[in-house]
Image (cartoon, rainbow, N blue to C red; front, side, top):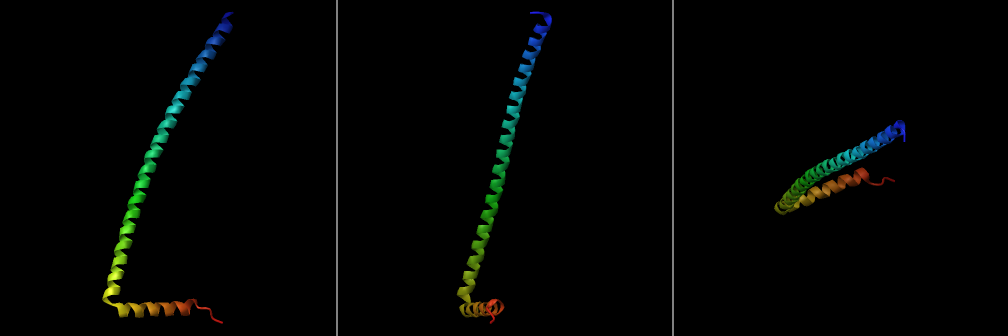
Length: 96
């Protein structure tokens, strides 16, 4: 082998080593990005769960308040429901 071929072989080997190092570095970056995405996803899911729990407890509280009002004033509640139903009937009724 002459000097030029030896240099080409050494350059090709150096290039191969750099490509392998680049592949390893890229793999490490991808792994880090996956971990960061997973952590952010878990945090977002936890915030969503917390918001859903608050909404559920608020709706339960409101349902209990309505139930208490119905128990304390049944006649007024029936009249209000009838009036609202009558109003909706007039607004959305089929007029021929």
